[in-house]
Image (cartoon, rainbow, N blue to C red; front, side, top):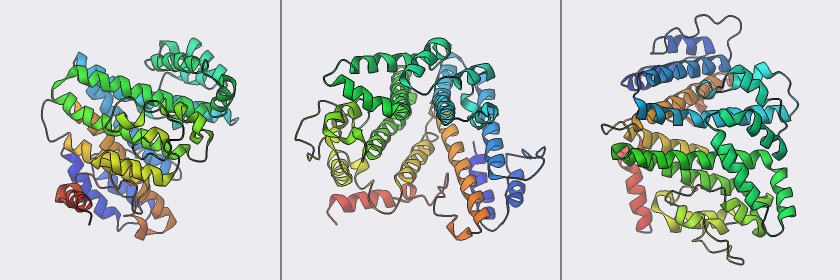
Amino acid sequence: MLWFIFILFFFFPFCLFTSGLVDIRDSLAETSYGRFLADHAGKLEVSNITDKMNDKLASEFFYLRCLAGPILAKFMDFITYEYMIENVMLILKAASTGRTDVADIIEQCHPLGRFDENTMRSIASFENTPEGHKELYRTVLVETPIGKYFERYLIETKEDARRQNAEERQQILNDESTTILEMWLTKLYLEDFYHFCREVGGDTALVMCEILETRADTTAISITLNSFNTPLNEPKYLQDRADLYPSFGKLYAYGVGSVTPGKQENAWDLVNVTDFDALKRCLAANHPNWRGALDGDAEWTETTYKREVMLCELAFEGQFSFGCFYAYVKLKEQEIRNVQWISDVTILGRPELMKENFIPVFDPNSPWRTGAMAEAYERRQNGY
């Protein structure tokens, strides 16, 4: 895994002084990526670089998967389920917009979560509606590894339809069917993966439960943020929003439970938050890990990526843990995002922007390594 460090120190600083995608490609050729674009013909685009990097990641991942024992193999399969869900949603969303270039849509799917081509073409033939989702599960996805999540989603939403004001509520959920489906599948996947890691136990449980609890927290916060100015932020639909929160994590005690009418201003209940300021108060009151997470100029997405990088780097500090395989994939993803960002600003001719969304991997000067994050937390605790 030391090549991660070599890429950081030798490739990225060099890219800051190069211009043009050809230079970036040539720089990558000097790293472990090798001549991964040697067979590319025609105009070089950012998507060509990132697609080939993802293909190389998938090739390495599945090579390790072939060598894994039964428990590790199942753990690595869990990693791919997330990408399967993303691919299904990508195809459904593209099909709902009327796109007919199925081959191009399939090419955009992440290689870690691709099904066979017949399955992926079949997914594109279904309507992106609640009824279409049912038929998709019954005829295509029931035999796939993520079929169980679709089944549970259909069961849960059927139970929701029995609530009071079911017809009106169902109309709201139908209008947001794509978003609701994606959130439900993500929630069910995270819960399943979390319980599996706890069953594995040992250092794997120690490392992965911390990572997945953070994922659960960021998912709950993202759902709350994205619900603002939507029907899910209305008092009568807050319980539907709460149903989308993963049932674990450090914020779990404050993120689920019964919605209390007239209690929306209570900073202790994430489920009752209805505006940005209330969300900040909730995070400040509930857990020190998230205190100040929404302060400052950093985008929420950037904040989540930084925390993910920190936890994934820590996964390499211990021994006898499957967490390093999960961390390997996520750190490689961040590496690819970094290359994509560098490529984008290179095309724009704005090299001064390169460091804005650049999140270094294994950087000895990272705030969490130098103690800057701990010092900032102590200052907040003391009211400075």
